[in-house]
Image (cartoon, rainbow, N blue to C red; front, side, top):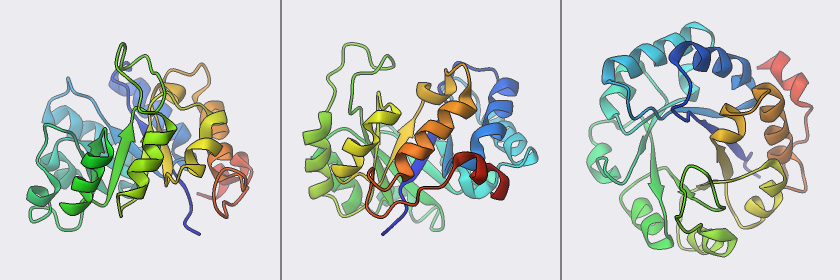
Length: 220
């Protein structure tokens, strides 16, 4: 069975240097790191992507939010397309080798993203989250519905704690994405270890591999 993915999304609350330091420490436990810094210019995003690579985060783990141009310039693995970004159908001819993600909030949007050629979707927010105050959470039933009508992997996001992993993956998600659960943690490495263990535990998904997180840090 496919290994479940763990994505980290930057939360816009850290300055560049502290974020780089944190990302360098946790990246061995992650599949992807998304630079989602809406206030940064293209030059600032590119500089951060280059710094991440300089401290050992491989380009194959980097995803740039919204900015297709920066993703290409940085040699990143992919771009995360928001509702206001180019659609997957428009982005694909410009970047045939990038992994195209699409942020969606309903089963219909997920199905449309797949139809347009996205490689995966970020679906949420699944649970209540401080980053979306007052907005309705989608819940596990809607997540399962989106999985059922979408032929590409769905990564769940929004208010997810390690103890939610089993429910999320049982609903059919291909993994989880975390923002404040790691970025705002007092100990980001310990938080990332907890999420990694939860996502990869056999009871959390289909055929997950239960490896000790500390061991993973030494071999990646």
